[in-house]
Image 1: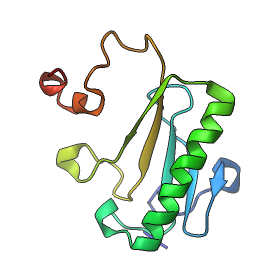
Image 2 (image 1 turned 180 degrees about the vertical axis):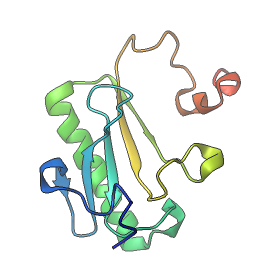
Image 3 (image 1 turned 120 degrees about the vertical axis):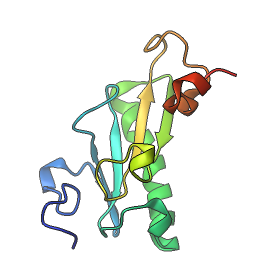
Image 4 (image 1 turned 135 degrees about the vertical axis):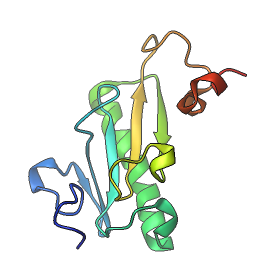
Amino acid sequence: MGPVSCVFCAPEDAEVVLRGEMSYVRYDKFPVSPGHMLVIPFRHVPSVFDLNSDEIAEIGKLIVETKEYIEQGYHPDGYNIGVNVGVAAGQTVMHVHIHVIPRYVGDMENPRGGVRGVIPERQGY
């Protein structure tokens, strides 16, 4: 169990949408788009690079299950999957969490470059 102040360490049952033995899925409380979800390990570690191979395998499986769940209720046209590691990369909660962000045709003028948009001047190529 991680720090008492960590918003991801002790999820309430009502907010858990999918669950594995080592990780869970919930909606993002500040969604980028409708259906935006987070895949989060129960173990408190700051970085995806701190996860063990079993946690990584389960999280990979939950990412696929999350996509299937989102498809049923939101019918997106695409997805971005991302992880912020460290303050320089925009991480604000120091408990690793993987964003599964549904994308929709027309949700931005030019989506070309996708996750490259974290540095807007480098999105186009």
